[in-house]
Image 1 (cartoon, rainbow, N blue to C red):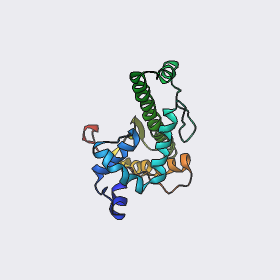
Image 2 (image 1 turned 60 degrees about the horizontal axis):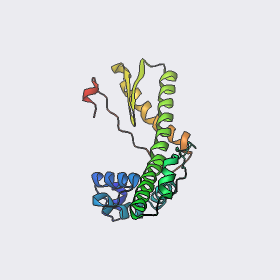
Image 3 (image 1 turned 45 degrees about the vertical axis):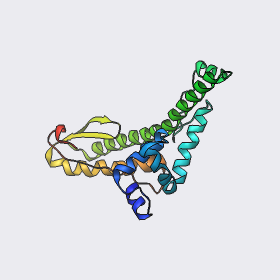
Image 4 (image 1 turned 90 degrees about the vertical axis):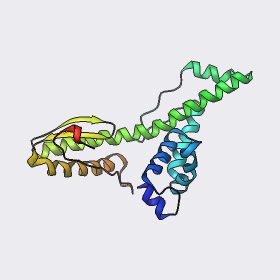
Amino acid sequence: SIAEQGRARGTELTERADAKIALLGAMYGATSGAAGRFMPQLTRLFPRAVGYVEHAARVGERGQQVCTYLGRWSPAPGPEWFEVQRATDTEAGERRATREARSHGRFSRNFVVQGSAAEWALAWLGHIRQGLHRAGLDAQLVFFLHDEVMVDCTAEHAEQVRELVVAAAEQAVRTVFGTVPVEVPVATNVVTSYADAK
């Protein structure tokens, strides 16, 4: 995890909560507050990753498109955006153009992260479904939201389904990204009611 690597390399990012703030800061371009304070630490730990999202932000600020890992392109800004970018003959116009450019840069920065994560999640769902089918389990994929899945199954199959869900996550990394030194940790919880899931 980021916090583990932060502790190992002597940075301020030693707590999970701080690492999460830094990660969200990188995804949304935070420059102030706690996220801004932790960004230099995150950059030292993961210079290529931070550089990648920073590059996506600069591309977006120019009104250009970015793409996810599997090649889905972000929508281009509309004609109004470009009109705002050209209307810089006054101080107010310049401020508005800068504000709108930064806003689109934040969108582009987030698009490459969230879009690529969504591609991984879709592969994960596919591998879960395929694994359940191959195993012939009395189980069904019944819920998915962002990075959370729910499989309904009999109690006797719960452990097998749990292992299948974790294995499917690892397989999804290989499917989408190939052989990379990246782990996607998956926390599982076996409960009798969704209200008890944490």
